[in-house]
Structures are given as C-alpha cells and as structure tokens.
Length: 344
Image 1 (cartoon, rainbow, N blue to C red):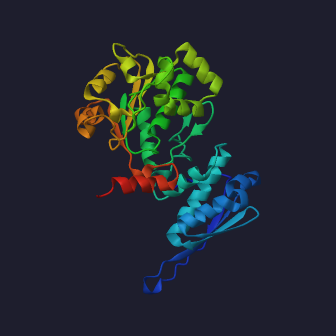
Image 2 (tube, helix red, strand yellow):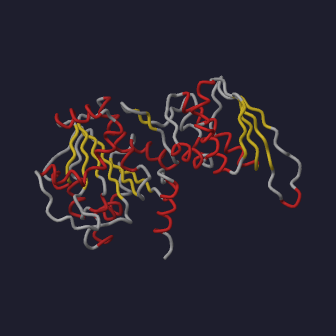
Image 3 (cartoon, rainbow, N blue to C red):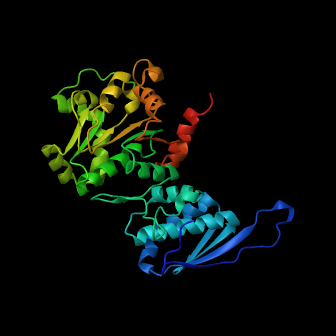
C-alpha cells in the first residue's frame, strides 16, 4: 500500500492477535499522529465529516484528539482506513484538493494493489498525475491509473465505458497539459452531433450556435482545466478547436492532441474518416460508451465497436475498458450503471 512519507504521520498498531473463536472477525486498533497541524482541519473535514465518511464506508470507529487519530474495527478495514487517511494527508500536503468524491475514490482504491505509487511514488517511480493550469489531477480508480499511463504512451487510445468514469475529462486534462508545455500545437475536440433520444427540430443561430449544445461537455472539461480567459483566447487563435465530426473530413491533423467524444454515435464511415485524419506528432483519444448508442441501427451500426474490433490488436493502439466499478461521480451512479447493464 502507500509508502509512509518521511516526517509525516507516525503510527503504532496493536492488533488483536489472539485466535478468533468460532470464526469471529479479528479486530485491531491503530494510532496515527500528524506533524502538520494546519492540515488537520481539511483532513478531518467540517464537523469531522471526512472521518465519518471513512467510518461509514469501511465499518470502523475513528476518534480524533488533537493531532492524534485512533482507528478501531475489523483488522482488514482498519488497515484500509489507515491507508486512506494517510493518502488523504499526503494529498493535502502536496496542495491538492480533498472533497467527498476524492475520499470515496481513495476508499475504493484502498483495496487495490495499485494504490502504491499513485500519490506517493517510490524514488525511481514518478507519481501518476496530470498538471494543468488550474489543478493537479490524480487517478481515482485503478483503471484510471492505467488510462493515464496509456495517454502518455499510445498513439491512439480507445476509452470505453459508462458515464462518470473520467474517459473524456482525463483525455481533455492530458491534452491541456501537453498544449501548455508545447508538446502539441493544437487541441482538437470533436463529437458527432447526434440527438440523444430527442428530436430537437430546427435550432436557431449560426453554425456555432447550432452545434455548441452538443459540444457543451467538452467546453465544461476545458474550463475546469484552464482559466476561462485562456480558453477563450486559444479558441479565438485556433489553438483549441471544438467542432462536430463532419468538419474533420479532408483534413490532416498534425502536431495535435485529438479527442473524439461520444464515439459510439459515429457510423463506420465516419469512424474510418476520423481515424485517418491522424498526422505526425499527434495523439488521438476515442471515447465512448458502447451501451449508449443513439444512431439508427443501434450497436450493429456503431463505428466505435467496428473500429475496436478491427484495430484493438494493431501496434500503436491502446484500449481501456472501464466498468461501473470505475465510476467516480456519486456512488449511486455506479449502482445505476450496474442496474441497467446487469442481467435482464
């Protein structure tokens, strides 16, 4: 699990090592102390809300007095709670935000062997993170960690999975990071202008005003990673381009980070056209949920499924498959996805 940072929390553990009669759950207790008392407020949360969240999710009891915390409960849960609190503290010490969603993700990841190195890397292994002008982004699930590695390694990445897993958001964050550091010269965001089960009819305005409602999620991700004035300036200069997939025909996209969102709503012809726009010194991410196809003909007409089947094993392509377990929105979103995608 996460490596204990030098000069940070100290702890003593006194597990109940006596045999558990009748197969009862072994219990343990762990004490932790934190050096930087200025971090205790955001660590514990208002009215200890963060500690309560860890307690409720892991079935432990946490008591805090001054800079010391005691965790009691089932042995496995105490170990997970200890690692979650330590990683929460480490993130705050690195200047990162800590909200209920981040804590929920750490709780989920505390049972994964990949937690080590994500925030507190070993000396020879850099932590997995994306730095943008507005925030530093770290993975919130084991699959997000794999995805973030793929984003810096593979030429073309298929990111497949349900809503709320961070497919598009992490791709936009990586694109913004590379645009800022000069690795690419342009950021191109696209998606098919397909109505999701509704017939909107005639939309007033010029072309931009007609297609902007379909592209709003891409704008939202951009504004979360860059100051609004920079987004507007780069949009005006052409460094950032947001357009429907139909506008990609006939182009060669070199020195660019290219993202196609809602790719499950492309036709096979559109997908082939889009993939062949790939130019020198570029990276392309194709995001989509195979279970949310809105085009006529459904799954069998989707260009995303067709492209993954043809190209998944081709050199230079990476395929990341998210599941409901990787949803990083409110926990109930993951349960909704499981209910809709489960048997029957």
